Image (cartoon, rainbow, N blue to C red; front, top):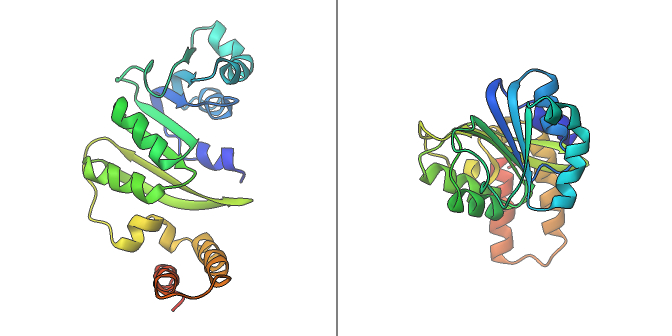
Length: 206
């Protein structure tokens, strides 16, 4: 599956769905077309970017099933929205959005970097992480799914760095080998050796 299809596979049935930084709106189209959500909100800080999604979802906007909101982060999103997707942003940017806004009832986050910091933030705020995996579509991506309440069983250092489910995914071994290859191209220092050994341990390559 491609990146969009992978992300969509994590969308469960819900009354209301919001796609923050929706880009073309493909994930929202999937959620509405498949019947996974009854109503949806598309949002983006850029009117130009939002216009692309509005064109794709014009029929759903016309019949009142989709609402378009130009806003920064969660600024224009109802706190009662059942499921919120934030994909394609950095982990620190997602944390900023949640800190300035709110942690949704249910969420799907696909950070482009700093996934460890995002996991730490969610766990520290009492969230329940229900899926924490890796997939590949040209590049490697981490994806985190969960709920605002319920708490998460303590993560190991390896799980925090790479995701609990990732460690049992064959794709992670590929990712680990590629990362080790990149790091091995540099002059080996004690710090670098520690990092390589940490990745090897996480991927059971030792």
